Amino acid sequence: MSSENREKILQAAFAVLSRQGYENTSIKDIAEEAGVAQGLVHYYFKSKQQLVIAVLFEVCKKMDVYTAEGTEGAMAAFENFKVLLRTRPDAHTLYIQLIGVGLHDKEIGAGIRENIRTERAHVEDLARQILAEREADPTPARAIASAVWAGILGIMVQKMVDPEFNADEAVDALAAMSLSAVYSTNSGA
Image (tube, rainbow, N blue to C red):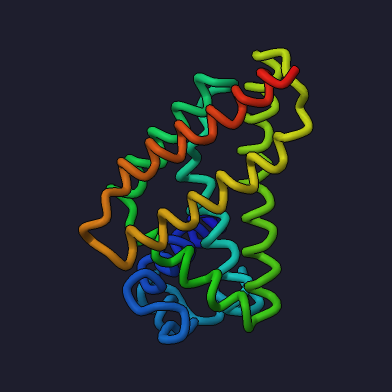
């Protein structure tokens, strides 16, 4: 039962945060949405920040785009990201909002930083795998991952603020540029 309550609180927190934003959301709002006592929310999460970070990691875990390895995995990840941009705008909007909150809130900032590092590490792993497939020097993998992750964040922001922005086209271009960066490292060998 306790894991059910925790899950119910996380789902309620995501719903309220997506609807009202971080600043306008209270623990009371989340407890009401979950249909539990405020004390139960505090039992699982000692602060609003801890709850929000848990929501962030839970949402990212459920939105896992990494389903394969190497070139195939990279292409699948880009395709999965396009689907998520269309189907989960609430999650992307909350993510971008929490980046802004994290600039001023040390606890949220640490959670966002950890999440970005984790996601960037997934991209770096894919880049290393692709470089290994090409028998190329793996050194550029970290820089490629940094550029790809920056592109992903930029695409999220543009999609959030401009409903007419063609995110699919941008993701396809990012995929092509990323893979060409990997391929070009092999040509210099």
